[in-house]
Image (cartoon, rainbow, N blue to C red; front, side):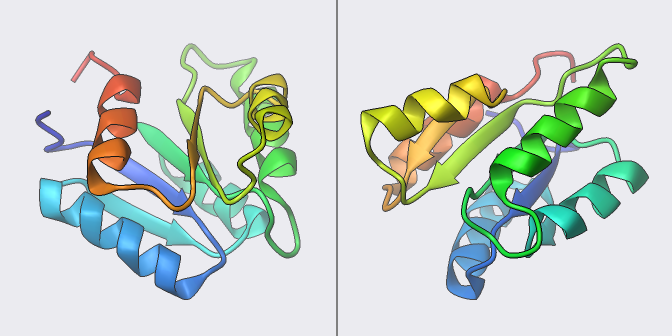
Length: 129
């Protein structure tokens, strides 16, 4: 995995989880943007083109499902689709299925190991960089 140049948006309302995920990404060389809710994530999405989005589900103002639906709606007129990974404590099979139904590309249940985290990231990175 050579993440140099990749921009990742982390959408997570829990400060400790934000810092943990940010640290894991920075350690590999990703450029990291952090948002505390879906509404703030949408503001960042309008300003930057991200290579990957890590999306929590349960957040204030706009949850991860709402944000994902909005991103997918906006991408209908664009020539790219940003991979969105659900990073969530909702760990039931029905939760995983719902994440895919809402337009997410992958699913990482919390808590996760470093190895699980990097594996999910690697399989979702666009290969055109």
